[in-house]
Image (cartoon, rainbow, N blue to C red; front, side):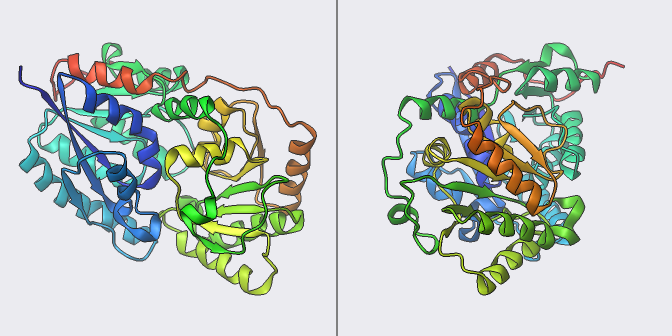
Length: 385
C-alpha cells in the first residue's frame, strides 16, 4: 500500500512542542510517511536551535528553509514571510506531499499556508479558531480560510471555526498535542537533571531547592514600540521578589530587539545574582521545570495551555493572550510591576490551583494521525454562510 505523505513545517521553537506527539504518531502510523521541514527561527542557535532536539528525538529532516531576515521588526517579519513562500514552494515541489500540516498562528506559518494552497496541496491546520487579540488573530483566521482540514484544540475554538463558515465534517476537536507531553511529564515529574550543566545559559546559578520562578515574556506585535518598557516592568517585579528566577529569551517576533535590549540593560544596572537566562529546553525538560516551579510569569501560551493541564500557577501579563480560553490557574495583570508583585503574592497564598482539560486529555497526537490517514484528499471547499 502506498503511504500517504504528510509534510509538517516547523518554523519556531514552541511549534515543536505543539506538534511533537503528532509527529511521532504520523511516523509510527503504517499508512503515513512523515516529511519534516524545518524553517525560520527553528534553525537558528540564537533562538534555541529547535532542530537539534528534533534530530535527537530521532526525526529525519526532509528539508531546511533558511528564510529569516535580521531586524526583528515589522518589515523583517513581512519579508521573512515572503521569502518563506518562495522557498517552501520549491520544497513542496520536490517532496510532492499529499497533505501539508501547518501549526498555529506565527507569521511564518502564513508562508506555509499560502504556498500549499496555491500549489493545490491539501492543507491541514492545527490550533485554529483561537483568539489572542493581536496580529496572530489575523494570521490564524486567514490560515483557517486557506485550510481544508481543521484540527482544533478546544470546543470554543471549534465553534469559532464553524462560525467562520467552515464545513463541520472537516472540523475536529483533536485536543492540543502539547497536552500529550504534559500528561507524559506528570508520570515522572521530578526535575531529574542539572539544568545548568545540561543547558548552560547565562548568569549566576542560584540554588533552586527552596523554589524558583520561570519567566517567558515575548514582544506583542501590535505594541512593538512598548516592548522594552513592558519587559522592564517584569524585570523590576522579579528583582523585587528577590528569589531565584529562570528567564527564557524571547522569540523572533517583531519587537524582540526591544525586549532583549531591555533585559541586557537591566542586567548592567541591577544585581541579578538570583537570575539565570536560557535560550531553550527540550519540551519534556521544560515541562518538568514548570511542574516544579512556583509559577510561570510572562505571556507565553504555554501558561494558558500546558500549565492549565498541569495546575501550574501563571501570572499572564498584558494583551498577548487576551481572549484565549484559560483555566483558573491564570491570573491576568497589566504591564505594571506592582500588579505583577501582588499576583506573585497571591500565588504563594494559594499554591494548588485546580487543573483543567480545556485543551484536551492527552491523546491529540494519535487523533491527528488517524484523521490524516483517512480524510479524503481535497484542496477545494464549499464555504457555508
